[in-house]
Length: 402
Image (cartoon, rainbow, N blue to C red; front, side, top):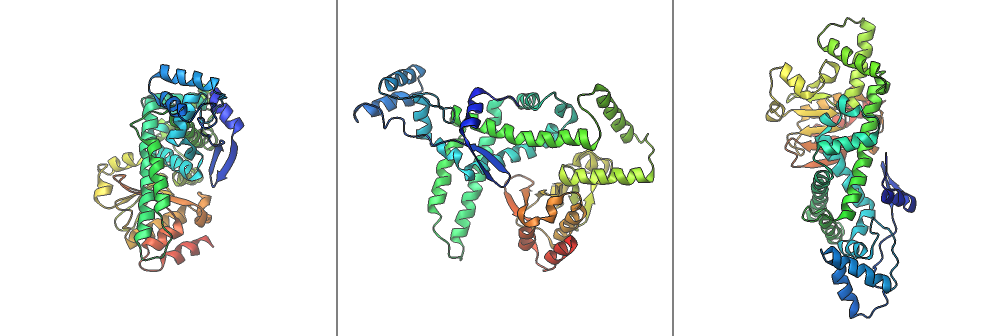
């Protein structure tokens, strides 16, 4: 991946912090650039007004005055001039260092990738010489940097809104908890960074850097699938041609395979479905419909083959399984007892392919409403505890892991 000079500097100068799967470069806080200027308290507000101006000439004049007053340029979050540093301080960009806010941006990137995963994972799109070319191509396909940034801003705001709602719900419950006002205020202030009403280059650069970092893992997973699991070398034109020919022949029913080959193929597809996409559904009766073991490349293709439209699952209270930990449901607060057991059947079927299921208390499910109006993140035990009205779900699930 090709980095800009400012991004490279950020990686070099930043320390590294890790929380779970999150690894982020963390920079020193931006200190108030006005405080140490060799000017009077009367002059400093005027210099700040110039620096905060939308007029570039005023900003340059503020930079010139600040340099005369002893300011030394450094580069934090891309703020490499006095005016940019003043704007960054005013906007509060230091919160981008916060692991809590960083995880919200990461979740927003994951959410956007989830929405667009089918097109992002197409073979022809993954088939690029490098990740940099893939990322540039996909960003251009989705109308460029600004469109991506605005989408991530909207999703980040939604994540923060959900966290605010959760805090308020906890505060309003009967449980005795400390005041959440300070944390709610912190989140509300952080949301200002992600307003689409402004295009602050510092925030946008950080979002794009984070987006590419999250997209890189998605790209590697799919490149690994096409190359390692399927035995194709995407840099070899003959392999690409063989891949397309084999897929075409398989779909047309022209390929005859032995029973042992069929078992291996089904196993590979099940592993793919459990970990990547197009795993299946749990219908309204709690039946786990494993479409990944059939010859279908997407939920839509499977629905068409059954004479159903793409609204049928939501209208009939089905649960869509993108993979073993990505669920789309009619209502995240209401899962029937039979569907809960259908989901447990799915996790049991996938446990040999998705090894994270064997450590359920440290891995999270991503659960969405069909209309994307609500989202929650729970472990499997938390999910079972929330929806198990019969009391047998936990025993069934953990009994299968023995």
